[in-house]
Structures are given as C-alpha cells and as structure tokens.
View (cartoon, rainbow, N blue to C red):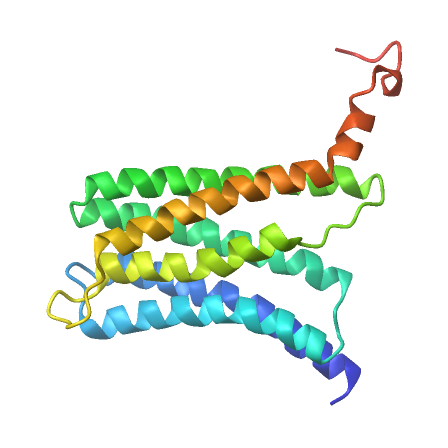
Length: 214
C-alpha cells in the first residue's frame, strides 16, 4: 500500500467518527419514544463504531507508519465532536425517560468533560508558542479508554428495550460515571503540570509592554 493511500486510510478512519456519531444523534432525537429495537440497534451500533474508530486510527497510524502532526490534532478534535454530541444527548435522554437524578449527574459529567477539553486546548495553544508537544499523554489516553465504553454503557442503560434479558445495574453505570469524573480531574492536573513552565513564562510581568492596554 502506497504511503499516500495509507495516510488517507488512517485519516478516513479518524473522520468517520463524525458522521457515525451524527447518525446516533439523529436517531436519538427523532426516532420517537419508546424507541424500537431496530432504531436502538442503529443508534447503538453507530455509537460503538464511532468509539472503535478512536482505537483503530491510532493503532493503524503506528502500524502503517503514517503518524503525523495533522493526525495528532485531528484525533482530539473528532473526540471533542464525539463528546459534544453524546453528552448533551445523554442528558436529554435521561430527562426524557424520567431519570432526573441521573440526568443531573450526567450534566455534571458533561460539564467536567467539556471544561477539561477547553482547558487542555488552551494549554496546548499556549504550549505551541514555547515548542511543547501537543501529543496526548498517558492521562489523555486513559481518559479516552475509559470514556468511550462508559458513554456506550450509559446509552445502553438509558435506551435498551425493557424486555431485553441484559439490563445493566445502575451501580455499574454510576461507578463508571464517577470513574470518568476522576480520570478527567487527574487529566486536568497532569496537563497543567506539563504546561506549567509555559504558563509561568506567560504570566511574568516582564512579558507585558509598559503601555499595554489593561
């Protein structure tokens, strides 16, 4: 396989996450309630495939030797689209099914996820001015590894047909949600420590012109 073909294949895997998660969104919003087994299968399948692409694109990029700076930026961007789409949808579904307490917990989780992403994006932009790497570290990878299956489990617990033999206990769902909150907080700390030298340099008074507007 030619180098260009391998590169486009990996980029295609990364970008495939976006239309797949929009299929999940469209079905969740417009398929009606209660959702039929067929529509549930479409939405849940699209969500799982979208999550799998996150595992496959990185693996394939390393295996096919087409890792790139573009890929290191595009992968977290598509992750953000995944989170921006799924978390508000899960909050909506929690309310629609009458699980208001669970919906409140999901709202807190969604805000924490999105705040962490904004903070890390800010740190990466600042770090780029000081030639610091923008690649995901272990905490970012651990967060992704936990978050994608957690979101799939939450959706299954909210939307799976009531007569299906496999029904997930709420203790498992809540446990994964609290674990996701914890890894997000750890990730915020880890990224802040990594980019701390850049932050310190930027807040030194000497970096501000004397006549700079306040």
